[in-house]
Image (cartoon, rainbow over all chains, first blue to last red; front, side):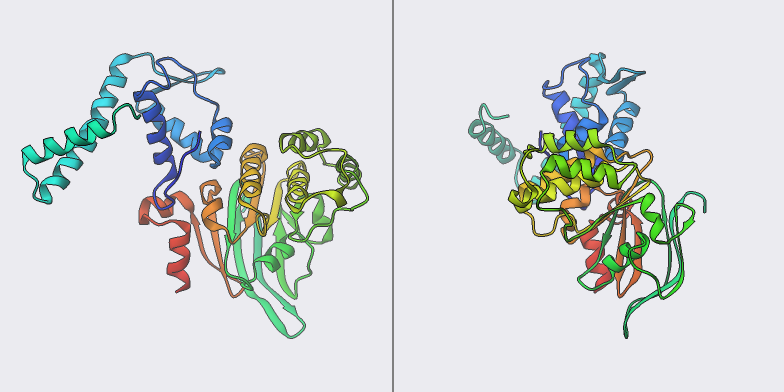
Length: 125
Length: 233
């Protein structure tokens, strides 16, 4: 796995986004074990303390569950993942809509643009 | 002060008539990975060598791991120098055994493991290695010492991106985060940034910025490079 980081934003948040993408897209399944902190650190070339923080933050949100002596796992609670997905989609869609409206696009135009974009990105993840 | 790894008290260092470090005092806490950045000639190497007991100070006091620094601090400090000091006539394997004899705290098994992960041929002579592989061997040796303080002076300079990536990954993998402090000086700031806990910025032999890296990002939305440009301007 490789993640390109923007050095002016907190890396633990960027890493969390990365894991959320994996979870929301189903690459990491419900109840699946996450790589250990050290493994993730090595894979992405990040300080292990930072990875630790990402894991703690994901635990706090209930998306990841730490099991004593076994490691960290994606939650088995489907509801939590649903919630996460809708949060993410809300955040990005809202941002997008506001940006487009600020640029003078009408509702219809926005819908058209989205349709077009969806068509040309077909099959790509 | 007990949890301070390095303490400098009004330390100066002169090379003949030139003053490299002038009356500096600072502390570095123990634990984590610390980046030492600054332009050429800012005094980074001098500070690191003073810390490792490889240079004698002209004035002041230096305490590392609770001990006043003399040449004997080498028992507690591993120093990876910019120029390498490997013997060409040894094979990689022999070099590791030699290190074991020189450093009583050397974990030979770990060194062999690292060298194997990096796919350097153990039976090749050091003299026959490429520059990149020499650098890999050096890193393996430094990371295999069981010491509280590891110092790496420009470990990435002059190496290609693949070797640099290898080195960064090895650091993330093998530094004992719980009981080791790593200080790494470099120009490739953006490359080591994701690795750092803390950054120290040096100018004219003085530490002019000391900050947690994630704090820079969270509070100021700055990367280490941005902070560096701001302070140096």
